[in-house]
Length: 328
Image (tube, rainbow, N blue to C red; front, side):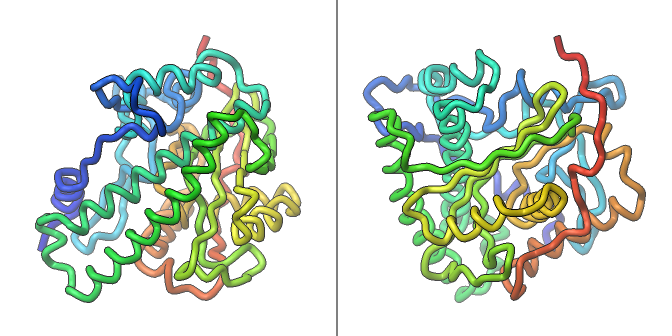
């Protein structure tokens, strides 16, 4: 039986995919960049804290596990390795995202769109990598039952086709600068909470437990969580044409702030590993709370697709407020 580190290494070795997500490749540079789905110098730098002499942060995607493959710890990483994906060439990564990389976030349609676009690109890249892995000769893949593997290949194929339709919507927005195809809901958490996330949310059930029929077409609500100086901004985006996403989007938008942060925390655990937080936040958790988070991570990985209601976590990432670091 392969151990946890061997499985992770096998996945990385057999799922690598490099391709520029931008629709027009005539200006692409040959080099595909290790781009950050979350800004390194404006966002991730705010999450760093010194661990053993190095500036580090934590990720839901950087964990340790015991012999039963159960999560038992977090492995700190540097911001250079956090949130990277090979989804843009050097030229388009620099040119496209300059307005949010070089200027403060201002809630404009352009800024909201660029965050949404990059989150979507990262999630699309993840699906492509999963598909490549399922079709590879990876050692761990070889242990999968044939029917299980066949069904998962079919599911990822369907998901890729579905996301390509929404990619066309994003491509059109870039060309026309008409942002009406997307809707946004924002919340500002004060004071500062040192956590960041970027992903597509596609739960099986809406917050009010309406079944979203993922076997037909998934909901696609895009989440961005941005620590921003003395505040943390939560942004939800959804496509106007996505009726299932609209159900989830509207239910979340109507929630009180306490229910909203609990729901977003639940979705961050249920739907994504592209979440990063400061050791200073982790240090404020009790031993029991840390164990609870590990338990929930494992539950969502193993059984998340089979539960018959919206997953509710006992963890609220936003309940602990911390003084923002001075990064100037």
